[in-house]
Image 1 (cartoon, rainbow, N blue to C red):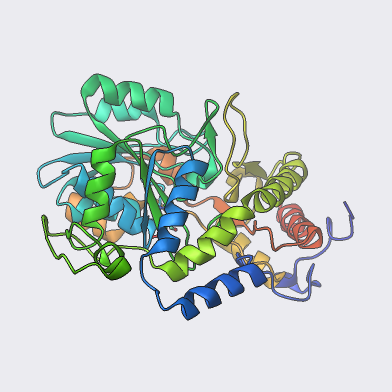
Image 2 (image 1 turned 180 degrees about the vertical axis):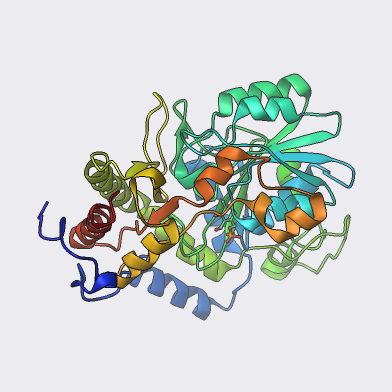
Length: 405
Ligand SMILES: Cc1ncc(COP(=O)(O)O)c(C=O)c1O
């Protein structure tokens, strides 16, 4: 690595930036194939859920080794549906992690159930099975782990606990496409797994999600509930001149995927291995550069045998005791160098909504709180070049060294 910036002055105090043009936190990799596929769907005359969605469901399900897959308009919808299909309701409790995006806990609240946040393991920031066990009560209906940044949770312990206590497990795998747990792809392991195809994820559909399961009854109910509770969706009612059948068996939702989205998803799925190679390569370049930097701790890594990280995000934790600046100042200094970084996530239990509604307080989940103010997510996506990656490395080292205690 070039050493030019290692001991230079940060832009924020008057130095020169490591790069001239702003590096986005994320940019999707959309090529001619996706454009052609969307064009073809637009010209076909069938835009909503139809043959392309069916094809994407089949190919995606097979890819993650799940028997059934239901194409939806987002992972948020998948999480909502998963809990509804498992009949989670008012009076129930669902145990989850506080280090996640709003959707994870919102899905629990939308069912009328109570989100029970338990603390994370400080090593990988995933939900701690020991804490889950302590939090299980007679009201616990489900455990909702999140594979944060693509690092698989300890599913073996979580599933053992769940089976012993007769509790469902729904995985939030928004970050975990391509992740492997104990030599099994994340997808067909627990009762239901939910994926995201938001533009910032490992593959995108513009917006989209997939609910996967090995249980036929769950899949059938999810499919029906994703389209208003009507047994046959529009394609199945109208395909090949069939007469419409509006038989409604439940009060469902409008959560289905469209064929425009599925067409993009199919192209992206074909290229997933290429995308993943870049994610892994860039993560390891970061890892190598930062593992010798005492002012930061690397969180994205693959340390358990039989597991594979999905390399969704690359996250470092600043070692506050070795730095004169706060995490937020570090982020500002990176932006001044023309590098956009992020925070994933400020702990949910510290958000005003959860404090007011469920009486969560600072001090309840010390591990999540500790990292909440120290984590920084760095840009990681296949559209980046090695030079982009190097500029991020140079900027982090420059700032960390300049503000070293
Ligand atoms: C951990 C996690 N869960 C769920 C979601 C929701 O995904 P979507 O945007 O597809 O609804 C996200 C999105 O960022 C996420 O990061």
